[in-house]
Length: 594
Ligand code: ASN
Image 1: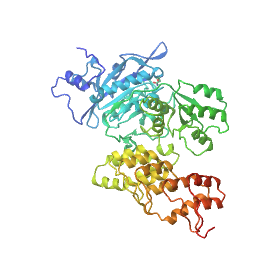
Image 2: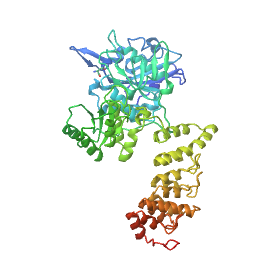
Image 3: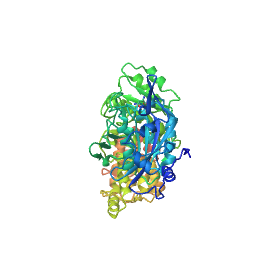
Image 4: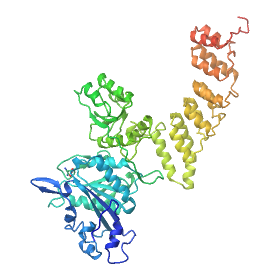
């Protein structure tokens, strides 16, 4: 009976039903099953009336004639040679048989016609068949393959199996086709290697899908990945660049996320562009745009009209992601002409390709639970290996970089050995302090989930609360207080978080710590008087307020016997005088009666 292909199709079952031998199929390392999803493209086209068009039920027929793609003898032996099964088997290689099922789409497409719905169909096919196969190959036209690869890379979350796109410049059936090698390579890799990413295989190289751009309509080298070396190279030997392969760093299972906003666009700057064009482009329903700028992310800083349009749109909540017009390299923060965009609210996109930038925007803007701030934060993050993080921030890693903190925490999360735990205990306190200093509550929560002790201190005895209090990050201060951090912890210099908030004039923080019972402990009255008087001398009203709130005696006198009001008066600091009088500080006579 003819096998009726459903959306979910199990090659194992097909093989079992076809097999004349009861022990088939065997489930060990000597076999692999690959689902080949055939969307369209030149690879399966035929010339009809002088033009190439995709033709249904033709690819399988061609494959059956190609010994490198189909071991006819073995297929016959195991009953897999019936056309209607759409199932194939490669010749044995490195001790392994790779079987594949060819799932041909109802309407085969030139990839110029591939749209969001097709992406969703591919995603759905992978989701439905995820557990049934070791890997997936998508046969696709080259024209928009880089867009599809990027979109799939975001839609497939926590991917644990290979998804490889390929196609060709010359149809499989023609004498000089590059399709045979591409097809074979993709299926071979999907069946032999666990490279758990959406990749693109072309001309003997496997690239990360969201790093690719189509660079030629003629050459067999149709794709390049300008900012990331190939993940795998096929030559006499197959070389896998294992250290570059993007790995999951969560325990989450594979899932798909198909909420993708379509209201995104690509705007390329050019010297004679008008402000009207920019304004028109940034109108609703547009929600996000990729701005392709010059060189390292530059825009003319003397074109105030354009910058004003960009700024207005960003203020309105439009998300603008900066990527370069250059074919390699990325956006950096080294020029004034780039800084104007940053100041206007444009997000630096590092070395992301325009194809990946559009997909990332669609994906992030489509997440209903993300606030605007979260969307902006996610766009700066390296989600699927689509950007180089050090270029995104325009510098190498530092403790100010929350991406770095996350990267380290992720590494610590993976390990569970005693050694890793010991390293974690040492590394968490400075990482927590760095995150507290940056006001990065998410990073702190992330570390807490990983088991970090929030009360730990760094080499200077400073706790995360010291840092958050110094910077006045009230949300972080609150969180740390609610999670057991002590307001009485003293650092190497004897300071408490309370004292830090006072010194740095963080009034809101002083208030919060006071609510928790914060008070000055053993600070010397004389030192406090000097601090108070110097605030008065410099008309530092916020400083006076801070000391006042902290409960410093406003009548205390410095080494000359002056009160703060005396000092303010001597220095003619009107605002300080006013504050001290209004806050009911009554001038004291100097002890000598002056
Ligand atoms: N126009 C074709 C496509 O993208 C080009 C190709 O596959 N080489 O479908």
